[in-house]
Image (cartoon, rainbow, N blue to C red; front, side):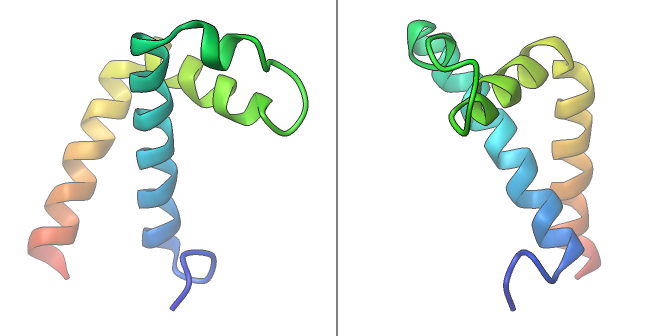
Length: 72
């Protein structure tokens, strides 16, 4: 089943995208910052969410990991 049709998989992919973009921005800040508009702006926005909402993103990652390992 595709991640589009499964809500839990869609949330997992979104969390991984946010965490990955924030990590890439910590290594190379100029990479996502030069593309703030258009289709590539999604990665810049995900990096911003990962930086500014990091405690909430971390809690969501822990909850998602718990649900994947123990609930399914």
